[in-house]
Image 1 (cartoon, rainbow, N blue to C red):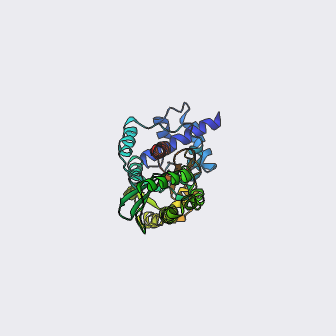
Image 2 (image 1 turned 90 degrees about the vertical axis):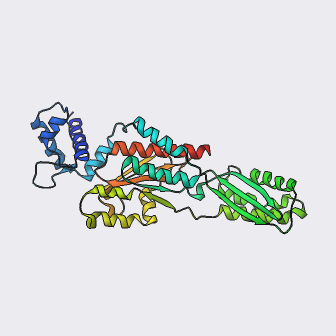
Image 3 (image 1 turned 30 degrees about the vertical axis):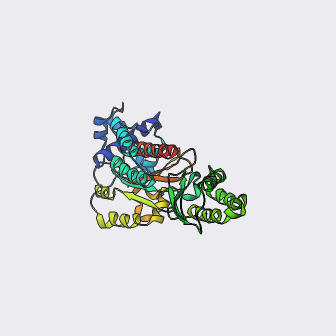
Length: 340
């Protein structure tokens, strides 16, 4: 009973501090929250929470603020993540539904996360190594030229123009297209590459040269790793909400956020879209970001995460609301990718 009451006091302190950005006193807790106990009991609970390292007194005022340890207990004991409002759900649906390709999905997701959470948003491009082949298209452009189109499960599209030594018939083009799809559809890229190697041998000797050129172009498109470590950042202007001390806290953060390797490490290695991770204060693996928290999750069609997205913000953030938003955006992006 005592532990439950202390947790209720801690929850009230976190909520008030996030809301007001001011240290919280026992009198304010009693007035704002129906804790069902006397002010003296609240003071005793606050003293116990301070002794245990969950709250601290920043200066000589009577107010207390949560520590990293206090935020961690608060997040770990959340019984439910705050549901999104109807307006937030509409914002997610209307902004993401109009996306035309993967780049557009990523850019819109970053903008949406930054707007809804008022934090710095980070979205990683889906990594090529985890992708599967959704479709291969071969189109005659006229003369000796063919357009090869590779569509991946991530929504990524790669195109290559292939110059042939001589024209080939539409029937042969259709046959190549069918066999390429049969060999690669639903396959991981490494497996698809292996299955393509022997494809020219399935054709008559006179057709093997153009097939080999197309296979080489398709394998090259599959091994293009340009986007494997690409991340997009949005909402850095929200750092102004941290308050004073630009040189001491915000400037080092901005410098850290410019490094893509740092961003990828911040987001972590999410293995499934259903896993939501919250790293608080000194749990974040960079000293420059020790006054921040990171909320991140994976996204992708099915149960395997193709990439991660999340936010970076001050430790005094609205954890229930932020966690709900990150999870909802990730699920919606996953749905878009799943539907192609």
